[in-house]
Image (cartoon, rainbow, N blue to C red; front, side, top):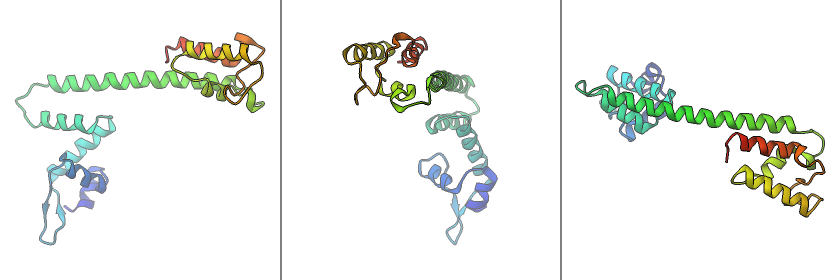
Length: 180
């Protein structure tokens, strides 16, 4: 079958198929006398395997390993299991990070007064960002004590509400989340 037919049958875009050929995930197909690529059912099955692996978030190198492991029926499933468990642990770690970011962003948005830009908790959280929450709180408190008027460096972090202001609370919440 031609590349367009193989792309349709596998669910893989034809440019992606060409890329997989270049990097060796998909063997170079036979060519017709007129020079067209000619794909077999095995090629389509392999493309479906690759596409499904990508849908599950496996890297191309992980898929390469899985293809090698699937190519030898004498091998144990232990290596496949290990690779899948490692991949799942990475996904769960990224989900935890994304959930922490979403909670922080929700709190920042909720703390925003939608009043004036100089009082914006969202901008304060971005301008006051740093390596960790303790450093950010220290910078915030030192800027409040040093200069009660906002300047371009601290973008309005000075406030007369102290630790009850939304920016202060945001920084404490971020520290409680374990983010750095």
